[in-house]
Every structure is written in C-alpha cells, then in structure tokens.
Amino acid sequence: MIYLLLVAYVVWLWTPAGGASERARSLGWLPAASILLNGAWLGITQAGWLWLSVLDIALLAVVLGLVMKRLAGRAASGPAEAIMLDGTFGLYLGWVAVATCANITAAAVAQGVDLGATGNQAAAVAVLVVATLLGVVFARVLRAPWGVAAAMAWGLGWIAAGRLAGAPSSPVVGAGAAVAAATVVAVAALARHSPLR
Image 1 (cartoon, rainbow, N blue to C red):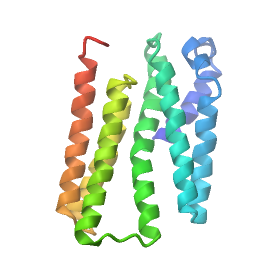
Image 2 (tube, rainbow, N blue to C red):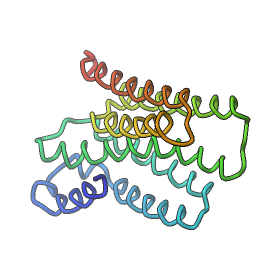
Image 3 (cartoon, helix red, strand yellow):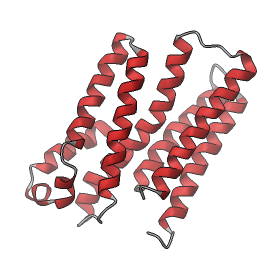
C-alpha cells in the first residue's frame, strides 16, 4: 500500500494542486532521497548484505523523520494534500521505524549472535522498547499524523501475532510487541488532544 501511495504522490505532484502545494515544495529533495534509499535497501537485502541494509534503512528513517518535521510546520491545505503528504509519508515512516528494528535484529541473528534463551528475549524486548520510544518521539516531538502510529501498530501487531501464535514462539516477546503497539496508538491519541497541537 505504501508503494501505491508513493506512486500516487508522484502523480499528484504533476497535477495543478500538487504543483501549487507549498508544503510539497518545502520537502525539497527528501522524498526523492527516500525513494532511492528504499530501492537500494531492496537490492541490498536481496544481495544478503544485512549490515549494509541496516545502514541504508537507518538513513531512510532519518530522511523520513526530516520529511515529517517539515510537514509539521504547517497544516495541509485540504484533504488531498493531507492524504498525499501526511498520509503517504506518515505510513512510510511508521513502517520504516519498525522495519529498522527488525532489520537490526535479523542482521544480528544472521551473524550468529546468541545470548541464550533469556538473553535473546531480553534483547528482543529492548528492541521493542526502542520502537515504542520512537513512536513516542514521532507523536510528541514531530507531531506526526495518525499514519505513523497506524503503520507502527500494524508492524508491532504482526510481530506480536507471530510470536504468540507462530514459530519461534515467545509469549514474552509477543506480549511485549502487543503492549508496544497499544502504547504507540495511545500516545498518538493523547498527542492529538494535547493543547500544544
């Protein structure tokens, strides 16, 4: 869905409304950089260069964070602009945030990092805590739109389902992911009703 929204965003830029959008112009080269980094990430992961993929997706997360920061500076001029900018890049950032955490974990596992049953679970929970803190930062500092929390909750919910009902099973990690997803959504809801908005 995110890729479809990115295609729609590019098409929208060529319409009169997209071409006249000051918010879209304020993003400069950042959307193009995010698309290039995403394409590079897909190629790098296919090649099996996991630690390079970690660097790439971390850079992608930074670029998307800058996008959200610039968008937070002014409100959308209408529903179309809100969907094309806030919706597209909000979902994009939320997905990348969770994917970055998962990418780091996958790279560590591929390198043979094994802390034992208890240590591995503790490390997984620590990664979930980091993901949750990112969700808090996005909501409270960047004033990110609902799309960020929705995408993060979806990704964390997927992890929860996989660890609670799939293999390898880990009730602790599954429950932690579920709590992380709920926390991200709750903080986003509170931020939207904050007087600072």
